[in-house]
Length: 133
Image (cartoon, rainbow, N blue to C red; front, side, top):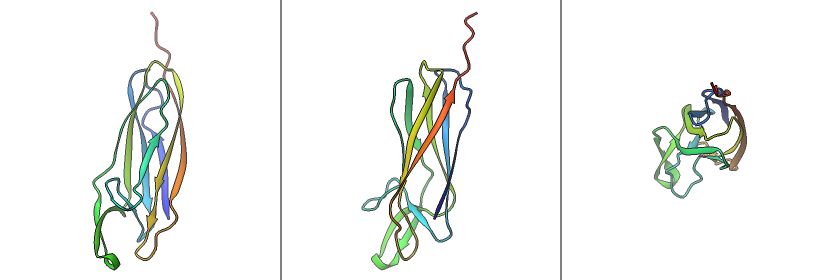
């Protein structure tokens, strides 16, 4: 019900420089996932495991859309169109690092909500050797 593709913006960053982990998410037709600011529902959340040598900043989520759920007469922030999450990260004194994370979400259509999902993700980032001149 949700298609997820992911990539690292640049796999050859020098140690200490920033790069981004990018997730492109496409809900199936008539399916939505809840935005991070939702209350009383399970929001989409990207979590990157903290570890030495890795500086993780706050993830950037796009502006959500308003969804009116008629049976409960409530408005909730959702994503129903393809969207992108960008997670800025930097290596701090490390030349190579395996980065682990998870994407948690609950997808729903106009009738039911599917079971919450947690998808394990992993990326390996290698920084070029520095010239010691």
